[in-house]
Length: 198
Picture 1 (tube, rainbow, N blue to C red):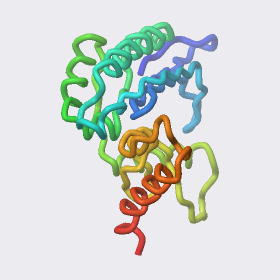
Picture 2 (cartoon, rainbow, N blue to C red):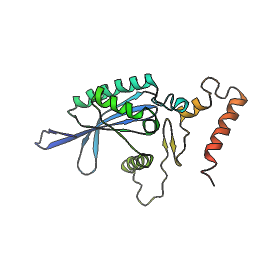
Picture 3 (cartoon, one colour):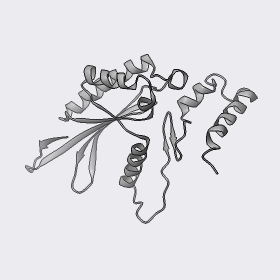
Picture 4 (cartoon, rainbow, N blue to C red):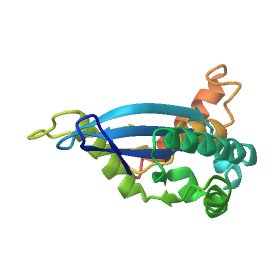
């Protein structure tokens, strides 16, 4: 979070955040306005597929790590171009579950100068809801927020994200081209969901 003078002499507060997901990484640079409002100055997205091999061997993919570190360095330069030097960076399911998640965070700090906060599944849900509540008026309404991730879907905590499922069932090249591939997929999803749906 940084302040820069405006034309009327007030200080404009700018901030930046990076979201490291299982499938992609996002940067948002914003200027804080009056109240709880803000104006987006820049948005960037990089497809890194960090969770590419997680369901196969329990670790983040080495090439995806390199791509993610390169994206972090690029995002940092962009934020600094807007005068923001303190970037809140969070990582979710993939980094949280990976055996080499802590090593990835260490390298991000050393090689990109980015400190990563690995958040819990509960915090993921809270932040998803807050972002929806900020964008839409949900007062006095019963709402469910469905956050579609690359590695985990959250109405119930399940491990049915698109990257994990396609790798777990080996259907990258044969998705729905054979009856067996579809049956395997449905059976795997049913097995994951049955304990959650009573």
